Image (cartoon, rainbow, N blue to C red; front, side, top):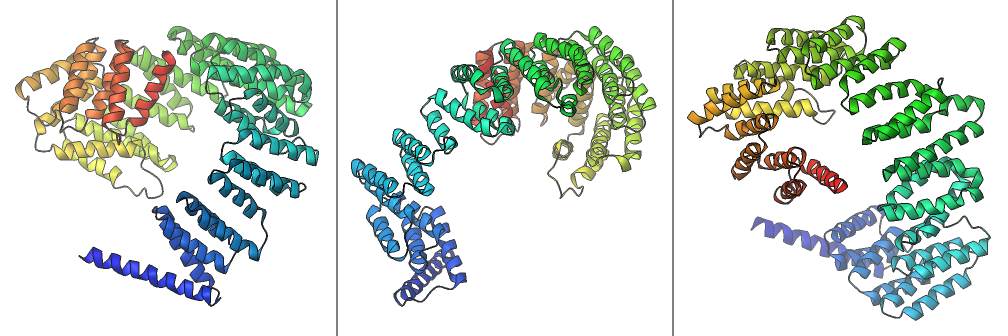
Length: 619
């Protein structure tokens, strides 16, 4: 009842306000600026809520007082066209023309004729506007825009061509023309239009490259653009290096690395010939390095190696040479040739001991030993050397985190805590997220030690931290998730202890022990509240043990729990097992698509979409 009364009062307010406006219009009393602004705000709100007729009346009321109020004119036009009230829009324009002349009024009158079904009459009207205003740029812009709006692409192109002829300038309306050609899938003239712009603005090559990339969605379109660019190189010698850069990018995006490499080589040669001495030192090898880096990320190792090796050989003093040598070491790691990668990183660090890349190389050595070879003692040696020899670098903190991870894997929780406390002791010079990360791991250690209350107190510090100046990061989210898990299951101390111990065993890669520990508990406690969490962990153990179908079975059980919190995660994990382990791409896609369909608000949506895109590329 209260809501109805409020709505009635609100409606009466609108009626009163509109009546006041109409009365003042008839008396020719101008609205104060504040009233105009309020009326325009009301009109905008009405339009946004879909009440177009009411909004149009407010816009018209403003225009009758101030015919120069363009925003109200555009608002009235939108609303009247939306409701199909063409006659009222025509009458409004005729009224406004009494006060002032504006080309847009005539253009819109022609548009009304078109919308009423009088196409020939409208086209003749638009043509007349151009004829009568042939020296006015605005006439061509307004008419061309109206023609494009109604998909009259041929007529729009002819209008822009006439403007070029009249003003003897072939470089006007480039973007409009290119847009039309793209809409018509006519990619040769589309490409030529942008080359005109590039001739005048060679420094905008990255912008033009992005325009080509946004249109070249298929190999066929990309090939057509590339074909035109190749033909135009000789006749556009002044921008040949820009064309080479665009071609290199087009072929790289298609993963045609051989062709891309050839154009980046030509770009390097052009850069060497054309650049002044000061610039040469800065740009030598840049194109090769960018290509090599992209090829490395894409897994095109042969081409990455060719690019890096050529750069080091041809431009040994280039600022990109050192990074290319580091890239060559990364190639071995990317190909899972870990002994060779360690040797390459060691050689690099010995050759360039004072470079920041040398420190990164030493960190990579430790990471390979820890993550890939699981030789924890060797990893610890590498990390300890960084902590000892590089006391004033950010990587020292990273090395301390990794030493804590090594200690956890070795079940040395005391040493893990000591390294984390060292990080906190140095926190005055650390970023806040490093401090939070250390506190989160300390809380997890308390959890592993079956001390949920202590863990909860530590987690609460992170959750309650004053972080109003920034959005929550991964550490805060993880802390909140673990905190909620503990709070919701404090009455099941045994179940929490089992989950904590199993998580520690899983992290230590003791998958058989973790699996047995969970299985034994679930046999006696098959109604535990923590069943879904335990199943997720068990599926990961089974996956590492090669029991993929059993892992899928556990994920299906999690998904089947309609009251559970992890149903979307179960679909994501099942999809990963199908894709990465069982190589069943069809079932993987079905899992990802089920996640999208069944859980439209899931936090895993973007990850699922990305995996579907990757599957499409594989197919």
